[in-house]
Image 1 (tube, rainbow, N blue to C red):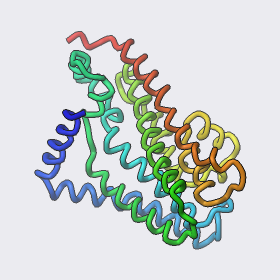
Image 2: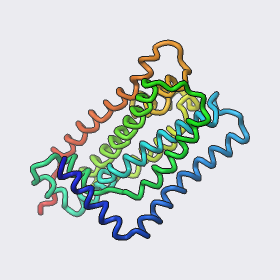
Image 3: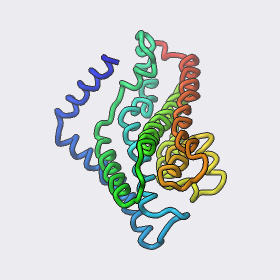
Image 4: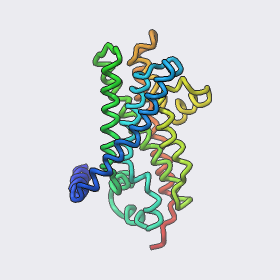
Length: 260
């Protein structure tokens, strides 16, 4: 891990060599998702609530998902563009090194310009918390932190599954964006506004419901019983990474190499 953090430091210095480009990219990353939130805000100017959720409650959901997604995109970008390693044959070199393939792929690509997306999500988070009358406690604060951590791990897990397909398809599959970008867009609203199939799929298959809905019920005091279970659901979402790692290792074992 010492080498990993040293590598991060080198990459940050590299990005800052071209400050203007970095700043412009970060600004662009700030405004693209911010326009999405403006759309949500305009929606609530027309309707007082959506599925029983107020603007500020949806804003809290939006902020948590976008914070998690921006961090996962920054540090998990290596998996998102992994197909380039297969096409160029660089994955062969990764296999020769005495380190975990997962750790090495993590280190192949970082997108620090995602700080713009992260900043706007933090601003929306502060905006939502300021307007919500939440009786904060240590447990609620810890739950909020675990919601973000769980979201980061789930999105990275989705990127890993998408990268694994490249062992057989060579090219990355755009269908995985249904669960990454599509999952982010879907999960910026509480799950109760969707039909039963969507709610079950994004709770028990892709467990974004353990990030944007179930623990949120605890934080917003929308449940009176089994509060402890709702509080712990982000930890169940973190377990999603286990099958993702298993699928990745299965793909690595079946990698045929480029013959180089």
